[in-house]
Length: 127
Image (cartoon, rainbow, N blue to C red):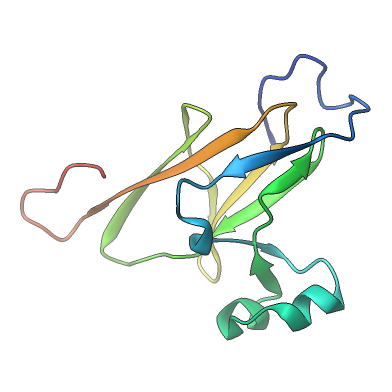
């Protein structure tokens, strides 16, 4: 299911301007499906390549259907995700990680991951 972020003109706008996804310094943790054989060859991460993934592009066109994966999963960690100030619950696939699907609005968006160690008797605060 795609999430729709608020946009003045909507997803069907004919806007060719690009906007950015701010991964809050965690760019390394996000991936997307390989777009072409050239991009597959350029991927330097064997784990991503084996799964048909490449590092996620931050620049997107308004109205573009965005599908990105959070792949840096630790078994002893709880995760919360904030997309443009709203907590979201992405889908999860055990072989890849969390899956985000949304339509790129006509503005930059921020995707933030909060995490904490879940193996402590008293859980740590969200970081």
